[in-house]
Length: 191
Image (tube, rainbow, N blue to C red; front, side):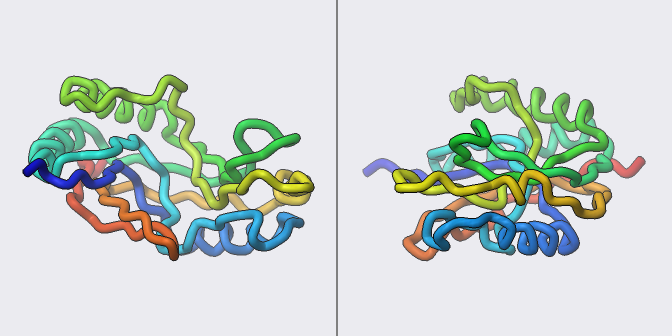
């Protein structure tokens, strides 16, 4: 009998200060409360790579690869500032917080991860990596497109923090929302 697959992804945790900003900005979207599925505070993160359905027997191999990659990289300093949406303001699907700071280094780290995951048989997404923090997903169809103008023009004090590690997560989708479990933690080298 084949192993039951699990959903996995690689991410960076965010500090409590970022979570507080995310929660406060959720109220700036004028919409029927059921029209947006907000990310729960314990699930707010920066995705580096969505792996997808994974055989549990592959987790150790993925963790070994991540340890090697991360061991070759120094910790990162990131800053959260600004807001945005995908794909466009006229029909937003994803509401996000922007990420600045060591973005070039972060993208190089993601490229290294993507290369190794591709070799394991987990193809990467077609679109280029754009670091962000998803805080809400708008559900469609709706009679009225949600007004995200206030969200997109919201101002908040930029938040900087040091990224000491990356995490391999399992995501279990439940009717009440996703539950994340840590499958591996990988420390970046201190500068």
